[in-house]
Length: 302
Image (cartoon, rainbow, N blue to C red; front, side, top):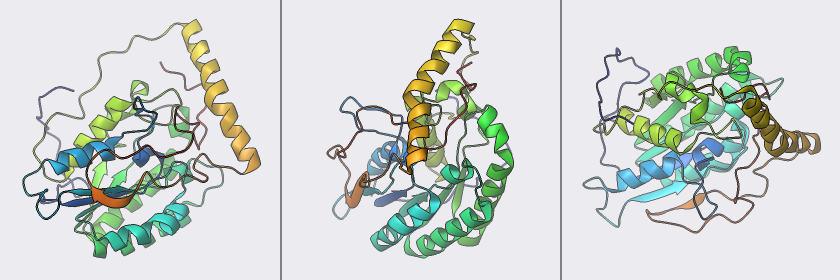
């Protein structure tokens, strides 16, 4: 990313920054996006924007007072918003953290037959229980890879994101508008599964949340990538074939058998502990897992 942090956009109620911390504790709730897929580390675990943000917050003056900066990440890949509410919200509320991020619902709206009103009701329930228990609640307009899938489900996504804005106003939450950032829609910001951000994408999300909290910018996270060189026909077909074999067909298999990639998986970092490396979550995390909402094969890079 470039170091130029100039931003001439008008500031809206949806992205106005909260007063900066200090933050001594941070709890993240959500699905694969918050777990950190596809920001894969050499040991087979995932890093992701929430880990990156925690590392930064731990370095702030005052964050280490009284026992050290603490961080929990309750996210589990594949979870729908109802499951996030049922499995994560009460645990997070009991931690009474200075900072809580809640991101969910996109897995729902990308599924056929989704009831967006029900998704919004679950989000409202979650925010209503989290906001009184934490110092600052952060909500997000989730990023989406530009292409046929995003276009097909755009009305649902816009309904969800408009509700997120209303919910934030109701509870004094900060909204980070990732969907509105054109660079995060660039296919090159997305992994081979076409549903999860690359390492650079997660770095930009961490910077976006950092700035939304009113902390001094380190980079312009909206800076576009260099002009793309469109792959040739053969390269695109190979990418489609690899995507279908490694991600689409396993996704179809799980849908037919009623399974999820998150079944049986514990939270990434279930306890509010001092910041530092933790052991990798046991389970099949050695390679990026197939997506929960199947992108179209025609959404090849380029």
